[in-house]
Each structure stands twice: as structure tokens, then as C-alpha cells.
Length: 471
Image 1: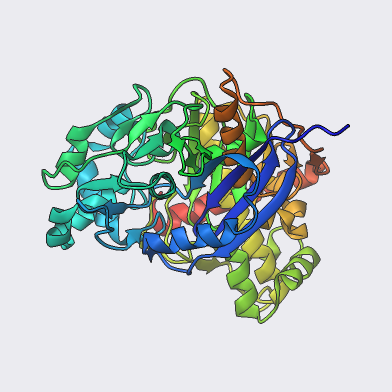
Image 2: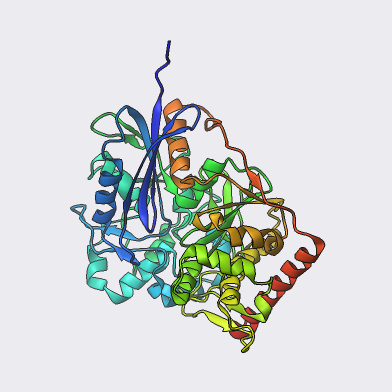
């Protein structure tokens, strides 16, 4: 006799694609998947995401009882009174709002004020900075804005059949710049100041397991959340577990019982998807550092691995500050990448490949330092994202990070986290379901010599950054 499964779906609407998983609600086993690509851009019409969602879910939602949507954080989605987008959404990696972020920070009491008020210091990525840019550069469009949402909010709204009430969760809301994760409340005064006195409607903030509603076909829709929060939910993080994600961006985050407030701006004091907090450090440059280096050398990613593994740690003195798309942490939105220590002897493909790997990892190691400085325990790293599958990354990471590194199986963790949230909302339980976690691969511990080399790489990276940018 067979028992009928209860199925839930999770969506990851990321920068590059919409990815969908259908899971067993009790075990977490992934049974079906779907995908649709997004354009490579820093501003996108929201309808593109909706069409991608429809394509990615086509034919795989039969029998699904609940769905959750996780999305790229910070993106600015503006709609008018009729519910139509006012302009293409500005994504987290659009840096045109850098000056707006700097102006807002200075205008309202400096970094200490912002860290104390919303747990984070505004940077170009944040929604509030993009709204200030819109008010200053496109005031006619700003006047038409009736409602502001994040990408996951807008997709949930569409899924439930607009023009109903828009909803969000405290995790994704905490990346806007006008939500206080400590109190769980919006700061409409900050929003109005940033948006030239305008006060558009904001999504209602739901609890972690609170359903957003039901589709016309009866599918339960969970609150949804931001991509990093969903990944944390999928990985069932505990104290001391720190995730380093090597995707389009790089992120370093853990869970905490107390909100973070870092006036240096290195740590964003986000909320998570369970009722706790998610101190996070983000870099704009991660896996694309490797793909760009491969393009420069005219090779593929497998060749980058092969080349990097033939070079000695430290790349014979060649190093890279990999700020190819500007940088968020440190806050250098107009910076560019640079190579240091070049000589005729070390300018070889294998050293360039090694410098790209070490430069990417060193930027994230600085994120671990920032978490430690704010009393976030760092006992081990879980390395996820596309670049976590790279052999050269796995070889270098333990010595650069200087803590045990564990690799979960390759999976769409953001989508899985969204599915776990959907299962939680469907169950009505006090805690999310415990899913059957797969075995983690623990990377070999570095030798004393390798640890010393990793520390030297780390200090060299910091010194070069200070010399170039004074930070």
C-alpha cells in the first residue's frame, strides 16, 4: 500500500534565472525541477520574471499543495494606481544609486544613525537608495508610484491575482532600508525623506509561517522571503554555522538571536526567515570573477581549475582585487578590478587563474572577519553556489578562510528554502519541518604551512585594498 505524498514548490527568482523545485513536504526530497533564464541586465521589467515563472513551472505543479517564492533582495519594483509597473525594476547590482546612498547616509545622522535605526548603512544596492535616485532623476515617474515592492513581493502579488493586498516577510523587508528588523516595523519617515515626501503603499509584513493567501486554483502561497534568507532556511543553520555563497554575488552570513548594527557598513543587519536575524556581508563579485578570467584567457572554467591548481599558493606574487562590477563590501561602487605585483616572471596564465580564485576568496574572508568582530560565532563554513563546485576553489578555501569548510551537495538551496517555507505554512506548525539533510563533504584540513600561506594571502589582500582605496 502506498501513501500519497504531499507536494510543495519553491521558487528562486534570482538575477540570472527562475528556478523551481517541487519537494516532498515531509522529507524535502526534490521530485521535479524547472528553469527559465533572465536577461543579463541590472534593470528588468517585472513582467520578464512573471513569464519566466510561468515557463519554469509549466507542467510541474500538478498535485502541489503550496508554493513559496524567494527572490533577489533589494530590487525596486514600482507600480501605479492601476497596478502597472512605472518603470523597469532596478536590481540590487545596479550601482547608479551610489551617490544617493551616500547622500542619504550623510543627510540623516550618518552611519551610526542608520545602523541604530535599521541595522544597516545604505549602499547602492538598497531599495531606499534606488528610490532616492528615482526621485532625483525621474521625478515625473516618481509621482506616479502608488506602491513599492521587492521582486519576491511582486511575484507573490501576481500569483495571488493582483490588485489585492501586497505582502512580504521581515527577512526581505529588512533589505529595503526603511524597515527596522529589531522592532519588525517599517520606518515610513525614512521612506518619505528618501522619496521626496512621497509615501507609496508598502507590503504588509507576514510572520515566518503565515500564508499570504491562495491562488484561484486553491494553491496555498507562503509569505516568501529574500534569497539569502531562503538559503539559510534550506540549510537549517545553527549557531556557528556560516554560509559563504559563491553565485553572481558573494555572501557571508550566519544566524543570530540579536540584531546586528554595524556603523562601518560591512555587515547588513538583516532578519532571517524564521524569526531570528541574519547578519550578512555581501560582495558584488564572486563566480563571475572566474568566468571573466576564463574569457580573458580564452579558456573554459575547467581550464581555469586546471591552471589554478598548477600554480603555487600566492600565484608567485600576482594578486587581484576583483572589483569587476564595482564593489559593495567594501563600499566602492565605482571601483574597478586591478592586478598587483606583476612581473615578467609571474605573468602566466596559471598565476592569473590562481590570483582570480584567491582574490575572490580573500574578499569573502574579510566578511568572516567582519562577522567575528561583531560577536557572530564562526566555527565552520558551508560553501554553496556554482563556484563551490570548482576544484581550485575547494583547494584554496580552507587555508584562505582558516576554519573547517564543508560542502553540501549541489542543490538549488534558495528554491529548496522557499519550498520548506511553503511546507511550514501548509502544516501550521510552530517550527519548519525537519527535512532529511544530505551528507556534507568536509574539505581536508590545511597544514600549518597552508594556514600560514592563507593568512599571508589574507593580509596581502587587505594591504592592497588599503593602499588602493584607503579602506
